[in-house]
Image 1 (cartoon, helix red, strand yellow):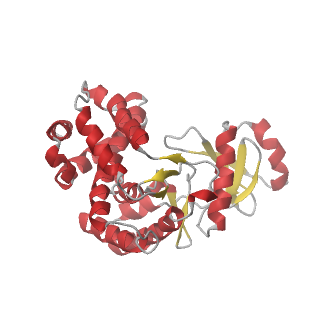
Image 2: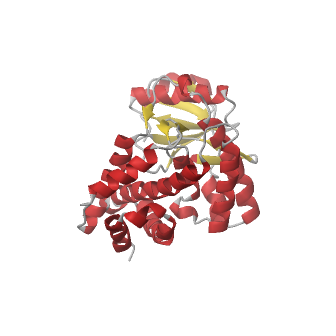
Image 3: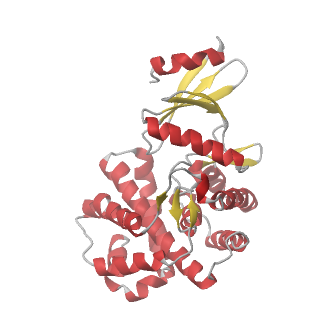
Length: 316
């Protein structure tokens, strides 16, 4: 439940108009979200006991609004509670699951446009930014091993191949990246898309974000739609990042698809297999199916036989 003592200083904003307060089911985040109903409209309340994270959320919101990126407006806040505009319940994943190609193309292109605006913000605008570098990519692989492979009594014993793979990705062009750019973090309201949960940004491979969007396990986008949308992204990002080597960019797009899928399996292993959270358990088969279908896509595996063998083993 909402800790009332944290909200009291903000309640004057609503006067005596609050009619209802309800929990919003959240995924893997430690933050808590609530919807407040008043006589006139609704608001979203974000409760976060991490003061530093709350400050980061607020400062990032201001930066994105300055760069004309669609994000929810913050109405009022204190160190633990943020009240922001309510964007409703419809997200981009709902569009994908409706399986209407015209709508998918329309809204996904809008999302990609917002992503490109996000990725092309100069990193100097952000006071703190971690690098999505070799160490972070290795952490993602270790996360996959710890929370997914160990549940299958498997482990990685071919670190030379993993290090070579990560080194390949380090050669790519870099930009600001969203880090979790997927359909649940992109809301739909009044025919526009809005970004949420954006404060996990880093500086790294821009391909990681478009891979996260197009290869979200539960979205199940058709391969032709993925190809068309990636081409749309590739053609437009080149207008802003001018030193892109097309062949290397596409090669590392494939690599980031694989990295994202492994990170996702680690997350589903932790939240689903260990913590038994329903959403993650339900999504796990989709992630495995997506890995199985795309193994032939990953050209890097042609000279990494042990890596390939492990992926084939877990997708049998």
